[in-house]
Length: 86
Image (cartoon, rainbow, N blue to C red):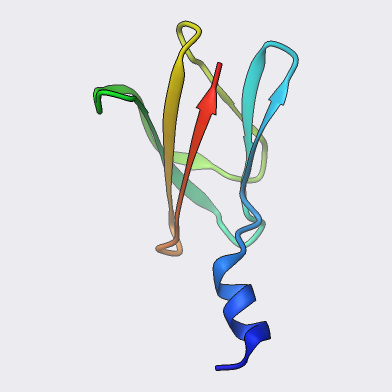
């Protein structure tokens, strides 16, 4: 495996970004659906949604200002995890 192949494996096109007062997920274009889970820092599930269509950006409905961990499992078997601050 050369360096380019390794970089392609590590890089995900999925992004979580802030849009005004909300956070949104922009999914990898190769995905058709994903399961989205959001946890607080104590590990409690705040949000779980399965089978989210990935052709549109997904708005994260986060209840209050705190730190969250977002975990996304795609239909292709990829997993994306990111910490966000609201």
